[in-house]
Image (cartoon, rainbow, N blue to C red; front, side):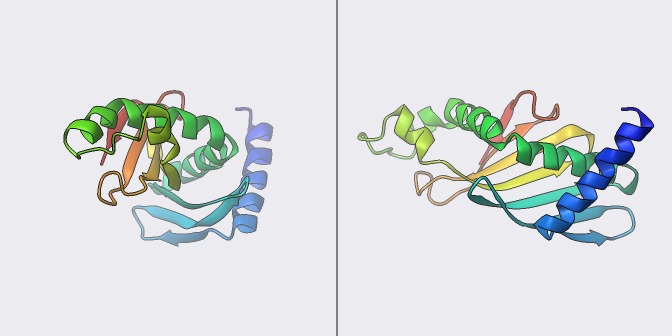
Length: 151
C-alpha cells in the first residue's frame, strides 16, 4: 500500500473503531482491542490481539473481516460442517431430523477474532448440538480460505 493510501486507511480505521466503541488495552508486549459491534444487523463480539508493531495491520484485517462477514460466515459454516457433521451423527447421538443444511443453519456467529500475521477466527454457537461448545473456524491467510476448525 502506498503511504498516502495507508494514511487514509488508518484515518478511516481509527474513525470506525471509535464508532464501534472498541476498547483498547496496551500491556506492553501485546495490544488487545475488543467490544461488541452490530454488523448488518448481527451483534458480534470483536477481538483483536497483536504485538504493537503489527497492531494497525491486525486491526485493519479485523475491519476487513467485518466488511466481508457474510462471505466469511459461509466459508466458516462449510468448514465446521466438514469437520463436525460426522461426529455430530456418530459421537453426539445427533437428532436424525437434522439434515446437513439444518446443521449449518443452527450455527450462529458469536465472535470475530483477529490476530497478527493474518489469522482470523470465527467462533460460532451451535444451538446445543454439541452440548453448548463453541465451534471455531480459522483462516491463516487473511480470510482467503478457512482451513482449521476446532471445538
